[in-house]
Length: 305
Image 1 (tube, rainbow, N blue to C red):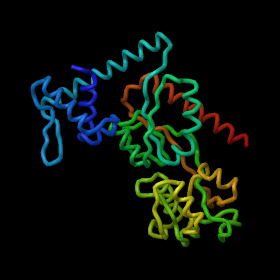
Image 2 (image 1 turned 45 degrees about the vertical axis):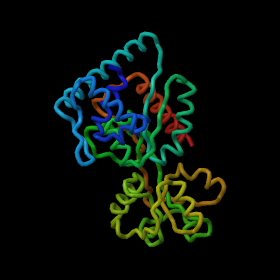
Image 3 (image 1 turned 90 degrees about the horizontal axis):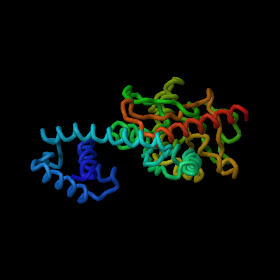
Image 4 (image 1 turned 90 degrees about the vertical axis):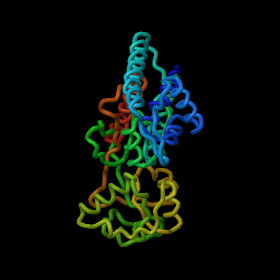
């Protein structure tokens, strides 16, 4: 019985979906189905019940799932122990990040990490905050970085950087010459925002409510799935928005957009999230440690400037 079959089984059992398992394993769905069929032939019993496009574990499947989890935990512990003895750091880490983090913070961080640890393979999945939390909960990714508070108390949440959100407007707009803006003034303008489930959207609405407003006050004219798309729409004069200051570096330098602070300022943490009980193998530990140090340097540089 190959380890690969057991790995495929464990992923399908966790996600209860052949399609999602294929995506998580970077395989085709027929390949996943074939591996499960091979494993069922090995045990001479069905491991999944398949009814009405839904699957569930049989009693035998539940037993295999229980043992496979222990087997892979022992594999990771064995690899970690041997690599600590030899000083070798290698393997694969699956990292998940929300769009703002993935587009504007991670490229430099991961570039430096790969230069120091060339034998560690980092896979990156990009989604909104809601999607990243779901992937952590379902063990699709090892470590997540999100831009909104996380309510799940079973996850370990650690703030890494403080991000400022500012009003974004094109040059020539009536907001462009202002030193600061009240959120209620923003609510009177056509507003371009992120999609449902976005951490940025969640933080903006929470801030609006804290300032005595309501979500319904926002005159949402357009919902877009990335900061880049929103900036393009603002430049085209379709409305104003609120985005992370780190996402505006290029536009502020070129003078194509204005970033105006809110009054009072709107800040949020970027946070690492991970399973509390998940076994933390060496490659994941090193990536987390490296990211923590990277964030610490950026905090110190920000304080100096």
